[in-house]
Image 1: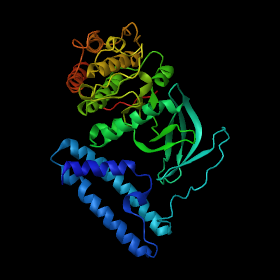
Image 2: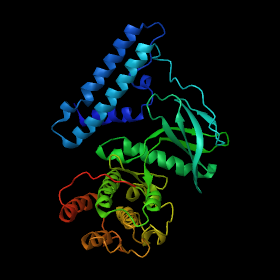
Image 3: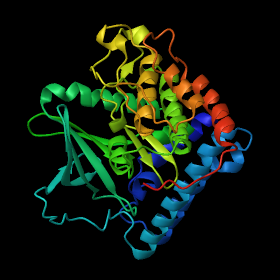
Image 4: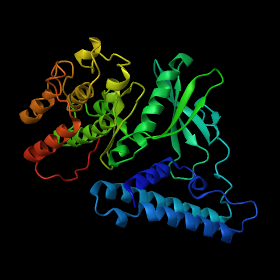
Length: 374
């Protein structure tokens, strides 16, 4: 079984919120037994693509297959429950929104699904972020966020994010677990574009710093560093720069030590081929070449990654200073990301990822899981 087929199946599984989307809708006159047979057949066909035993010779594909097979098994379990209850094909049981009392009670209907927006999570110059649920989802966590352009003139940035994430998810790998998932898209009655994304239950950099003003222990920052390098390295390998790496765009999920890189509105796509340039200026986290209108390179993202690490360690990103407790070897490594010249600065995220793993072993010993409490 090819890795490409595995990747395509994995993308379908990550996009699925309702089992009928994956296993198919029943015909109008199908008996429960016929529905169960059809669903079982669809399950087995997918199993023959994503079963881990089929990918044992490729470590990266095996990790992807393990995740895919677990997702498939959970969706099949839900389908069996719906068939037994006579609800398969009838949609979600949660068909009506309930008033939340926070002033937001809006249902968005697209060609694919329905979404109930319940709260405003954040308001920015470019977009407003709403929290809510997918009314057609059956999972224990139907949470979504809707990112809606503040004005129709900002639609291009909302579309830019969707395009970048679709391109990154078009060939899923182990690194895509660090990326948001776009579920849907819609337009408001006044022409503003919105992206619907799965909600990520994780803390962003400012939230972490607010709870830990002195910064996180360096051994935890290092694994965050590794995962962030993995995310940007994957994007760079696909010809995409994030374009605005800063602490509010880095989310940390402490339970499983996962890290997400969000807000791809500022993505720079294949700049050498397209002539695409930077789309914003962030004085605190952008390197000098952004203000100088220089050509976008991976080194620009790595500069932002380095600044984020200073921030999470409890240091001063503007002054590029660290708490005295941070090992000098780690400080020196991070400063390589912060050199003013992009040609002298770190440029290859994969190479830096490998060097960081070696440095982590030198400073902290063999890798081990240590719970992060924030």
